[in-house]
Each structure stands twice: as structure tokens, then as C-alpha cells.
Image (cartoon, rainbow, N blue to C red; front, side, top):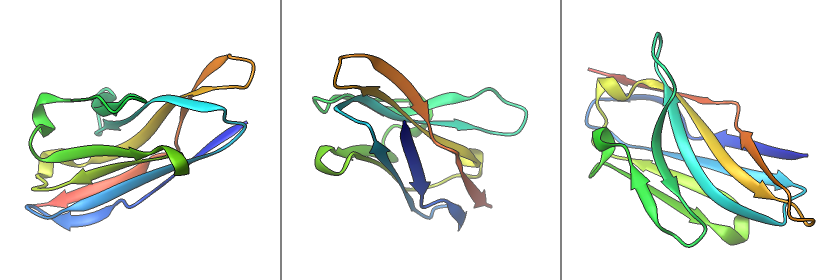
Length: 120
């Protein structure tokens, strides 16, 4: 089993910053892609940012230039630095990762979600 523990959400004023963290633990041989998704009330879950094991990243157009995703492979942790936050960034943010086991099987895991609220 693998657990993803997220932290760093909260309430911030527009223009402010937050940093989300997601630490993976358990039966992990290797983590492939790690990412952050978000879901606002009444909307579908959407990709915010993703980083593969080699370090390449991709971002949703709505966050390019404001958010930065990074990872620490030694700590099995992914981060999301969010700057210049806007009210439309308000959502529950979910960590996502693909875990490779010792025998080579790959599984997808999700965190429990952390609330980010941006006030205007």
C-alpha cells in the first residue's frame, strides 16, 4: 500500500502565495509521473501541473507563469509553489502519482485533497 499525504492548503488573499506538498510513503520502488489536479465546486477535476521522473513538466494554461511544480525524489515528495493566486484558483487540490513496485507493476494513487481558497 502507498499513502499520499498532502499539506499546505489554506486561505489566502488574491495575489498571495501558497506552497503545497505531497509526500508518498509505503511500498514504493520508484515514482514515475507526479502531479497536481484540482476540482472546483460544480466543475470537473482538471490537471494543474505534472512532472515526470526525469524532471520535464507541463502546466495548465491557466497557471503557466504563476505555478511551479517540483519534486524531491529522495523524499518521494512533490511540491506546487503557487504565486499570484486568483479567486478562480479556489478548489480542492489533489496529489497524484504513478508508483512502480519492486516487481514492476505500476499503480496510480491519489491524495485526500487539500482545500485552497483565494479571497478577492
